[in-house]
Amino acid sequence: MRTNKVATSKGDRVYYTICYVVTIILLVTVLYPLIFIVSSSFSSASAVSTGKVILFPVEFSTLSYRTVFKYKDIYTGYMNSLFYTVVGTLINVVVTLCCAYPLSRKDFQGRKVLTKMFTFCMIFSGGMIPSYLNMSNLHLLNTRWALLLPGAMSVYNMIVTRTFIQNSIPPELLEASQIDGCSDAKYFFKVVLPLSMPVISVISLYYAVGHWNSYFHAFLYLQDKALYPLQLFLREVLVQSNFDASMMYADGSEVIEQRQGLQELIKYSTIVVSTVPLLILYPFVSKFFAKGVMIGSVKG
Amino acid sequence: MKQTSRKGTFWQRFWKDRQLYLFMLVPVIYIVVFEYVPIAGLSLAFKHYMPAKGIVDSPWVGFANFTKFFKSYQFGRVVPNTLILSLYSIVASFPVPIIFALMLNSLDRPGFKKVSANIVNMPHFISVVVVVGILMQMLNPRTGLYGTIMMKLTGSYPSDPFRDASLFRHLYVWSGVWQGFGWSSIIYTAALSNVSPELHDAAQIDGASRFQRVIHVDFPYLLPTIIIMLILKCGHVMSIGFEKVFLMQNTLNLSVSQVISTYVYKIGIAGDGAASDISYATAIGFFNSLINLILIVAVNKISSKVSETSLW
Image (cartoon, rainbow over all chains, first blue to last red; front, side, top):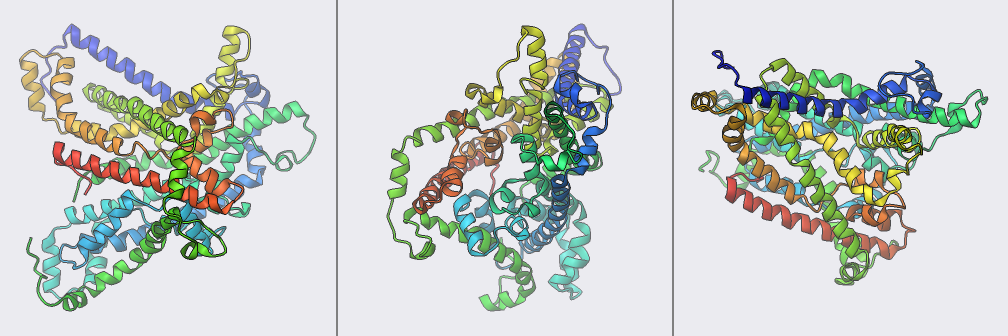
């Protein structure tokens, strides 16, 4: 911050105005669709299907949410996604740390070969078909493991973690603890783990968002609807407009036109319901995320 | 560099590091089973896959699967589609975060800057299914905003933009810009926060306007980061992700939306399951991975020459 300000010239004022205007236009572009979705989800079916919603809810109604909460698929998907996110992230973090810690130790014998072995997977992979056949040979298709085991560790996140450990924990600590007779494992639990909490929180968040948002593995490996994560049900509802009518119209009284209105309506509330957990979390963790980008950009 | 542990035989050193190796056990098993076994499975690309015999015992066919792909009319379709889509993505999505970061950085209200940065980052956390869903809702020709506006302006409902092949690329790319520009700007904003204030002060004393300072102080400072990011992006030019393209694909836009990854899926997994197609799909995937590998290695070489920054 400069304290002694020079009086702003006319040219600068024009420049600042342009900056503010363009920034605000960008902000509106980002925010408007989100506001539109939320407003629509709180409007009535007829207001939505006749396009009356522009900015604020029209004919305020919570019908959309009442229907969504009755929609059993969404509930199943929600619970499954919660499971995959929590268990998957736990596995991710454990495997990542187990890999990052030895590779961060410059005195570790196998360091170079193993690092190469892992980074190679970052730039080359077997691809869709061999992975699919592999999962099939391992009898993991159509099981919950199919969403937990492949991708149990992202090499990129592992390198971020390794770099963090290397850069933020002074090597003198290792020497001192080795002189005191501390074993490699003990050093990990007593020194590395407590000091790595910032990077652990960053990668956990990366992993968790990834689990919550991805649909590709589930789409490829799962057939049983009971195992579907939320994103697959969302794909059915939002993209394919594929509804299970029996779940929406328990009373069976609606006429076709109302059904169509309700289908449009329910799309908005599913978007909100599925995205809200992340967006609520977001303001609290945005600092960590931005930090993660920076940790990742420093090469070890 | 000389290491303190460089004494003793291989096994003595191995024994000394036994606990570290124990840590590595799970990650190594993981990487072998879920990464290297599929890489070995790429041998399928040179075989005629017979499910009854398995991958190992299926007969070799040499490069037959590759030549089949190069000769097929799909080759002239999916490869250009992939390239055009990702080049368009790079061209459209690359400048926006830079301009945004430069503008935001030159503003003098910390509160406004912080709130703006938080808002534009938000879409990054929305899943691709939801982004496509939002796009479809907004652009719905009857119930969406697009339909409503066109109805008011022209008096009739427009046609569905998602069914118009000529619009597929624009929709794909610009929704990507919407989702990603805020997040991509973080790295530039962070770099800009390191510009020393003395440079600005000196320029200001010399009578430089704020805009001139952006061009002559901020931008040059950002240039190395810009070059690295651009090079890295070019390394991924053949690796268009499956997820979003597949969601936006329909029978009417296949001529532009069929990219390599979705085509591999179509013949290898979604197809009627003719076994020969599996090795054919593997070959196409292999071809794609190989190009990616070459591009990334080449780009990394350039990057380390230009900026002394490399991936490894």
